[in-house]
Amino acid sequence: MFQDFRRAAACVGIAVSAILAGCAGPAPNYAPSIDNVETLKKIEGAPAVKTGTIAVTAGMPGGASLSLRANTMTSPVGKNYGDYIAEALRQELALAKLYNPQSGVEISGTLIKNNIDAGGISTNAGQIEARFVVKANGQVRFDKVKRIERKWESSFAGAVAIPLAASNYPLMVQSLVAALVTDPDFVKAIRN
Image 1: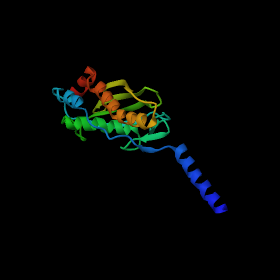
Image 2 (image 1 turned 45 degrees about the horizontal axis):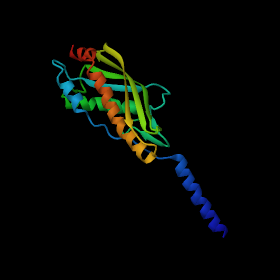
Image 3 (image 1 turned 45 degrees about the vertical axis):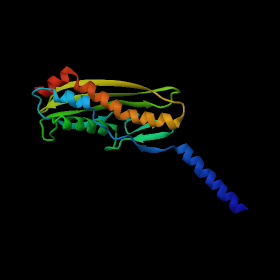
Image 4 (image 1 turned 135 degrees about the horizontal axis):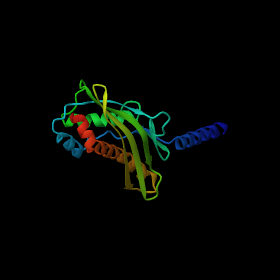
């Protein structure tokens, strides 16, 4: 009887640990935006550029992982979400035939804010803010902060809200890249 009690207690302990710990998993892989690629293709006279590091502001919540209720979402690329954004930008440039890892023109930056709220009852939102810098042979040509916010309909039920929040993250990154590539100052910086 004592062994049955120990087994039951162990099972309860494992179940409670699993519930309290939540689940951890990677964010969905980035899917380039056709609109972003077409916008980049339309930049006349732009040389191929390279992507540098998108650093993460030290101690920033959401830099290495995002909390979606009791779940944790990590970047499937590199060590943090700065790496995710740099890879997203690289993919967009490559599809537009504007990427060259040997280029003297480099796009880099710093992730300032990275947040997803998956706790809403009927709607949720996320925000990304990043500083982008374009350098040509070491000279700064562009230095601006871009910020996006995305809202979506959701549910109180975690089984619905958490996957919806996760699937909206790549769309948020697409919007951030769009904010960058449609900026006339960015276009001028990579064109010169």
